[in-house]
Length: 565
Image (cartoon, rainbow, N blue to C red; front, side):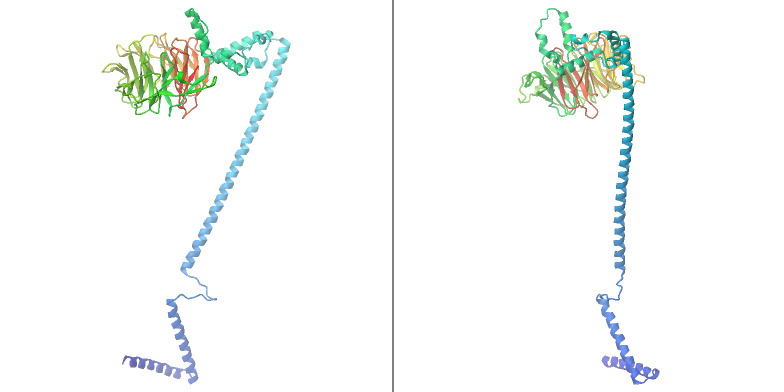
């Protein structure tokens, strides 16, 4: 029924369309046949469209093939290409700008060099004119010395050279006196010229081997009187000190060192948290005048941080160390012939002094009262009795009224007094019996803000000597509190001081990598030694003078300790 109905409907439709075509087309049956052909073609194209909706249509020769994804892809591709060309162009532009800047800087440097060379040429021309004038005047009047002798006076090498220019002795002496005056203003004298000239002559081979300073020379001469012995001792110290031993076992900067009172033994403290004991007699002398390495004979380990300060007992049987952990530890010195590979002895560390709450910066021991003094970053200065069960005897600067102490020393001329330096530029004298400050020493600072790194006491006179951050060394009178002498001693901050036990010489160390030897009586420099290298703008942390043997030691930030003989 449905098939007949649909067929009837279709037949009716064709009849209506055929009847409509007969009624409208006057051409008759031929026109009706053309109309049917047209309708069949339309139906076939519709069927093709329906089939194309399910399958992709291949582009024909005359078809453009544009679609929305294709357009977006084309835009993205062109945009990426444009960005790549832009970045390439910017990189080339930056490279050209860098080349232009480099060429401009090179041209400016060449211009500056040209100006400097022109200026130097003019200076040389002027100096040449002055030299010619001086030579003409000297040839006419025979009173003026050559300009080079006036500017660079040299110590005569022998008796033959002293008779070469007898006519110019007066003017030469005047030039020497003028130069000596200038050198005294900066803390030097003509003695440093003698030392350097001896060194130059020794390098040229024009002097005897005694210039190298062999320590055995004093053993060949008898010492019948103490007065000539003191004079020989002075002459021995006037020699040129040369580096003899290098101690290399520490892993970080060496902060402090001290000698044994009678043996050739050195104790060092380092930022690696250890103390090391060195026997200088165990070095192997393989080459003459060679710097030898020495291995430590014992290592002390107990501090939990860097070890910052050291002090040796009066008999050399005990030593004391202060560290970043705020403790002061007492040690027994082992036998100097101990085997470095022996088992650890727990009895080496005798006791621990507790009381400080921050780093212990300085330690000093008084052989007269058997007392130990320490100053800490917590602002206090403490006096200890290492042999007592209650070791802390007194505390100074409890309220930090003077700031933070940086160094402490017992006064050698009066054992009942101690001198303390502070970071604010003050130096105070304390009475150990009354536990009160006696006097504030005038350090000569203008605003009181110049840091004092170290203070020592004169071995025999009531004088305190301070080392300042502003490159100066000052001598202070303990009786009047006034500055006796002030001098610019180094090219950088003066970090450490020590004195000869006989009261003849002073040694200073600085961050300018130099160790300088001074005479205490006339405060002049007799020798300068450069031995250490800088590390983080620090060079030399401590210096030491052996109490009974001709040894000088220096501790550096380069983790080395050097011994000079």
